[in-house]
Image (cartoon, rainbow, N blue to C red; front, top):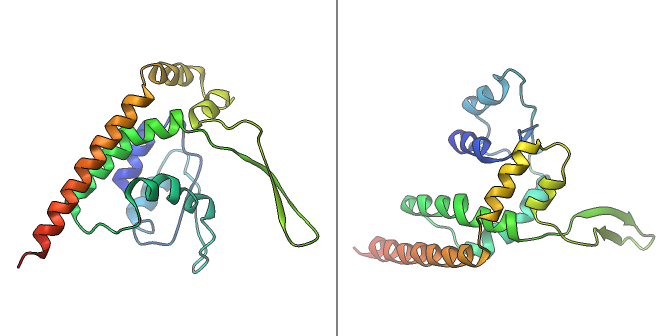
Length: 183
């Protein structure tokens, strides 16, 4: 987990302001604690309440669009598949999702008298890339770098590469599953 966090901090175009995790042992450890609190400016670290499954609802809602639609609902028990998944997420999938998949942002919620909630969304969806360009908190040099990166991307080529890598992943999965069932 610590290595992944360090890699993530190197590639995201903004500084991490705080860190929120669930209660798994992969998060609650001294190495991660030292990394977050041992900085010149310590990063605030919060965690979910134990046995409260909705505490990470905003993160969990992305499981469908970012994980399940790509890999399905199965659990993969082969360590050999991890590099294939990580490469796909780090390269093509993150580029495709962040630059070409717009989402609606929830603006507000109103509770109605009948117990229902009415949600109000922005009129036009935007990609995470567009939201970063509009943010006053992102330095202009970072925005230039993002624009250069975006101009070199082709959504159709990314989609094709994603399909090729998924085929490779599921072929490897099938081979590993066949090997594990042999006795």
